[in-house]
Image (cartoon, rainbow, N blue to C red; front, side):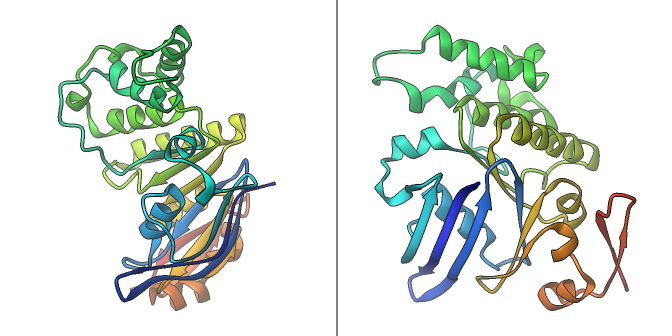
Length: 258
């Protein structure tokens, strides 16, 4: 089942075309990675899906709903984001920070949070092993801990679509694997549509069901990691000479050649 349908999507900053006639179906219940060299349009693509940017042409369909017909609040009930980092600069506790994920579901600005909202927070803190940090100041946590807090806030929105923008860029390998493993399990358990911008090709191969490889604002290759991550494709998109080896499950791993 298609969770996000991208139809003839183009986007420009002033007179510079960034995204060019993108056509892709992103499946529900799958973890889809967006790959490509710096400046190829990955983050711009994600911001168009999220609604931070509006395409010049084309449509984005969420589970059969035209995104251009949805209000900001309606979109916030459908989509959540785990950013690379947060602009949080206050002494807000982890519990209160995660509770912000319930804002799109408030009946009004004056209604306050319900017991159901508070239970959502507790459930997600427990799910991500954050209960002991509930009263801690969020900005006092380590990078890996705070990324889990960002994920907890995103899940507390009860999204149908989970977007992640380079969520592992500031993490060591152990924390990066742990975070993506948690996301993978959640995507399967909750049948979410997940889109993740990644730079690490081997992590993408390990955790993503399908990959979108971009170059110069277009989708060059789309499919399973085995189909997309080939020596020929990496040479064409990244100008990278490499050797591909596969494990016993057929997952490809890239060894750059110097």
